[in-house]
Length: 129
Image (cartoon, rainbow, N blue to C red; front, side, top):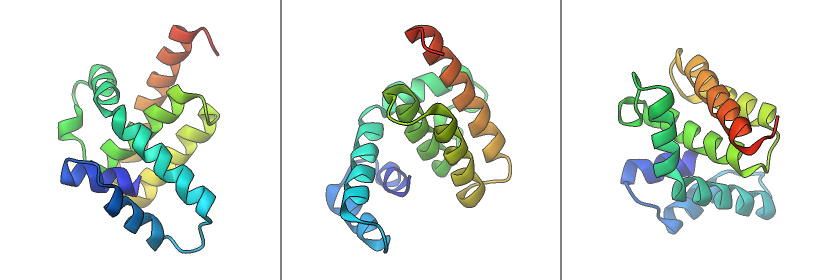
């Protein structure tokens, strides 16, 4: 999420900045660090479709009006929900915890609602439940 936020702030992905942020997280092994950077890259690449999905589901709070942290959490959450790499309950729970730690008081409920709606639509589209 921190890497996505940094890229969003700079309006571009920058592998050197990402590596610097990742290296600042002491206690994380190389495999976990690589996996996190891969997830950030994938979520960044999918940001336009994620943002469009979020805008359709929450037109009163389109991505350009959201706090940058929320936008980054949602981009990562949408990517994780649609990639199928992580169980949906864990994705949503982790997104809520990130919002509690890094964003506004209203953000956890907003992120929960949006990601829950994304999950339901994704499950309908793919026939998974």
